[in-house]
Image 1 (cartoon, rainbow, N blue to C red):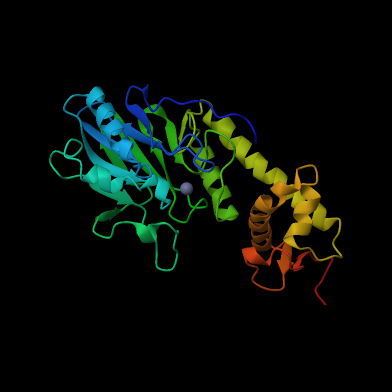
Image 2 (cartoon, rainbow, N blue to C red):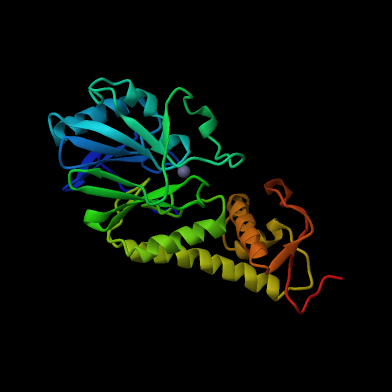
Length: 309
Ligand SMILES: [Zn+2]
């Protein structure tokens, strides 16, 4: 948790057809900044994500593009999900003549259905035409066959990308190069991790942090981390099945060896575990619990032996 971050070069070629350019927005939640990836051996380039909108990013992208091939041009920008640090630089890129000599860059993103707001996107420039991306869609460039793998959980619109030629994955915010990821819905997040595991990826190119060389082992570590926490919640509530819990009661038990300052941040994760266990039928609550109800004693163990009276 307190492990130091590796220093990453602001722009680097990672393989025959993958370049990583940092969004230059380091921070508590973005680690070394948001990674953007330029793909393709030839003139045509695909760009995964577009940074947060730091002005210096565009010149760094230009420089990388020119170094990759003097006549290189971006044909498509593929946005992994609606968090602003992944798309905030889009306007700067689209208005840069050097990146876009023919003025024909297409921008793709998984569409949100009505009512499934993913935050952040309400600020997305309304005059930019977003092409609706779908699960299984293929993007190509020289040496690149990139397949969209829809993996909600971090957000409802989150996608990852399978690079056929390298048998590797661009994981965006589903798996990070450092620490653990946050998510909105644990059930779909876990389903997403299982889906990625089945692909048996060699390398992972995350949305934040360094490349992960042993993809399957890292995904297993993420799955096990979440399962371990889930088992802890199950054990605690099952062995104390007669009582009601607040979220903070659970946090104080499970995080008793951590400083109290970490208890509140941990509570959000426990709420997500409880919601999943509720979906799985193992715990129940009297009402629809919101994040702000953390001090209300509403959670209890639920199985056949403890029928509700
Ligand atoms: Zn995100």
